[in-house]
Length: 250
Ligand SMILES: NC(=O)c1ccc[n+]([C@@H]2O[C@H](COP(=O)([O-])OP(=O)(O)OC[C@H]3O[C@@H](n4cnc5c(N)ncnc54)[C@H](OP(=O)(O)O)[C@@H]3O)[C@@H](O)[C@H]2O)c1
Image (cartoon, helix red, strand yellow):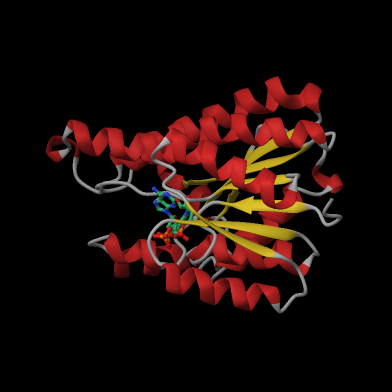
């Protein structure tokens, strides 16, 4: 039986997911990195994280498909025999104004960002129960509580993710599983390349009371903290990491 604790990070091979995976690797966790498209990128990240002396297992799975999710957790069980942390980081979404959104766009976005979280959490719980508990953190964004251009489908999916977080936190508390979410201001990852107003987002994102853009590591530090004993009494919350941006009235 593996002795290190094990953390699963969906979409863990690039962007914010990679920063989170690195944080867990540096703290002695073995990590499972889920990815979908870029195998080369995944292999590169695996190699980088292995330099921290921990085990890294890659799982190619489309979280849009609940059968794929179940297979992913079967693979984790077969490889490590345990799971202590589940980070729901993978996300996608169609960025269009309200009147241009079609049913398929809506379903795609809700399925990857909200439905996948719910059904992956169910599977994670089955493994965490065996080790006496664990921690779950989901990644959200400010569009869950604020109205951003072209963001309606993603914003609603993230609001759903935050609501799921609250329900999981209460229903799983008796199993010693701590559940929270971390939301962020704009972070300069590949995700932002899909936004027509990328430059404006970066400029306004950096124009916060803290005076600089949020880095992937800023998010990773808070995600990691929420999985430590020091955060044991924080339950079902969405912690905003935006340098104070959302406090301003603009
Ligand atoms: N960037 C921001 O400004 C920002 C701000 C606040 C919150 N967030 C949240 O932080 C999280 C990470 O964001 P990011 O900017 O790092 O995103 P990103 O660079 O776009 O990366 C997205 C990740 O999700 C994976 N993914 C997408 N669809 C998938 C699917 N169907 N199945 C499995 N994996 C899938 C991708 O895998 P592949 O590499 O295989 O394609 C990739 O690893 C997201 O939840 C996002 O909403 C981001």
